[in-house]
Picture 1 (spheres, helix red, strand yellow):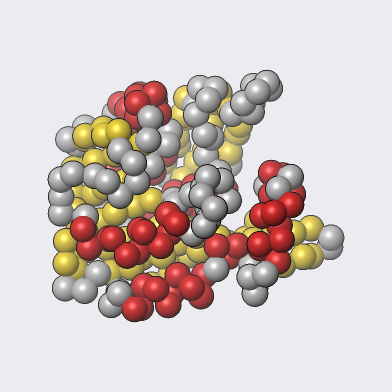
Picture 2: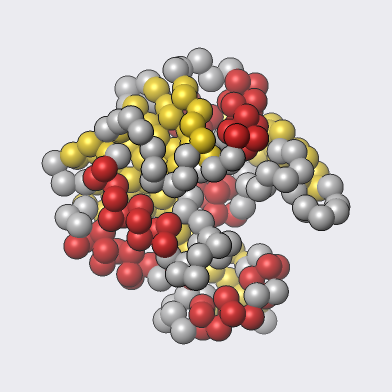
Length: 235
């Protein structure tokens, strides 16, 4: 894998260009200032999507960001997509990058707040739930509501595909999915160093220290695990 980020410095340190190779797919995304750039979590999810088959499926992506996952979902055979974002400008940027990469399948772009999406039921729901920067006092809000309310958006026997850090308490997610009758597989995992803003939030660091196995320290560097789950809903 190769990645190239061209950064603009200022109030928002977002890259202007993102280039990466995902298998045989070379993506070149335009990410203007003010729109969240692809994170290591999102990049890992993108790589793992190449191991999944979306042939003929109607797919919902919550929080499409700059469109990195949407493009790959389409190339993995999806028949239709609905892409959501919390802000119209972010939706417009996702549309720009999806169309730039010549995605031809029917695609709806919807401004929506997390699980509050009309339509469906969908065959698959793909997302990178916010956690460290969730904006919630209870940081697992987006992960928990994803699992608990999946049945409202995904058909029986459909699936959730999402990425989660070990910082977000992986055993708790596994238990919650089991309690909701989901059949869970791990698509793939990796690890990587902390992002700088983790260290800049002392409250976050204290919370993470309380979660067993949330991170490891090797040669003085902090690392988190990133796991992509595929959770099949009861049929």
